[in-house]
Length: 252
Image (cartoon, rainbow, N blue to C red; front, side, top):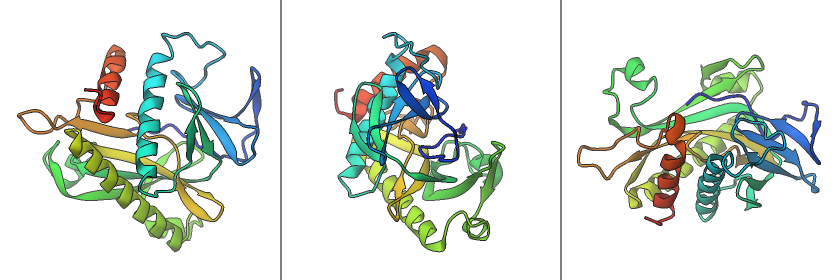
């Protein structure tokens, strides 16, 4: 999953006016706006990262589905006392979130041999791993993404050993909780990409939990897990996201 740099808190960024709301940070298919409370932001799911005031119902279908999936999964893991930036759903395409000081690192959790795993380690593509693999990727200001380990983060002053312990613990718990949910829905959590930030001295999960950051597979087939079932390309996104949301929320 390729990641476009975005964050719910890049405080060094200047703000601009968009309509009647003040844009805090614009990103790829997601915008963050200031709210009336300085501790919270409004996260908006968009089709192209900039709504430009155009909110036709057709253009909002896929963002609304992404938002619905993300809200459902945040609400689910909240029941397991996992600290996240999610506060509540505001509309079909918006949710209120805590304003985190984001750590410029993403954690990729692999449960199946996908992406670069088969080539790097000689594991059959699409096969399930015996144990989840967690990898750190540093997001530089020039948009370069580099595979790093915890000691890089210590040496560069990006995160402390205690913060990395919290991130590892949260990643493991989130992975276990979502894998269990998927198992009950005859789905598979193939891989996911998580981002974390600081909020009042604690590490919280940020970003979103949708097919943009998580890959879900279909485990109901006779030939094993279809790891690409819910990775839509092009015009089939609406149908694929609708089916995924319905399966997650037990509507089918």
